[in-house]
Image (tube, rainbow, N blue to C red; front, side, top):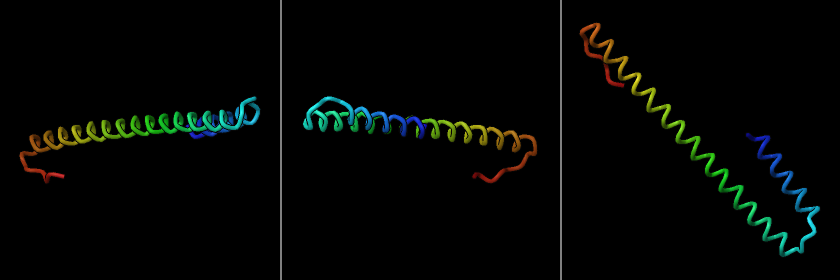
Length: 81
């Protein structure tokens, strides 16, 4: 993913250097592209955070089920983690 973002940045930079636009148009274009890139990065970070939360929740559920199974099998209380 890092290489994709690096390539995207390089491509944007080269496109701006060779684009036949005025300075003001170039600045507006840069601002818009930077905003779009920031939005994409924010969305990607949110997706990653959601995946981590889902995985942690699933692991906790499995640990609780395992602890219950051990408790039932041994007939003893287990310490709640």
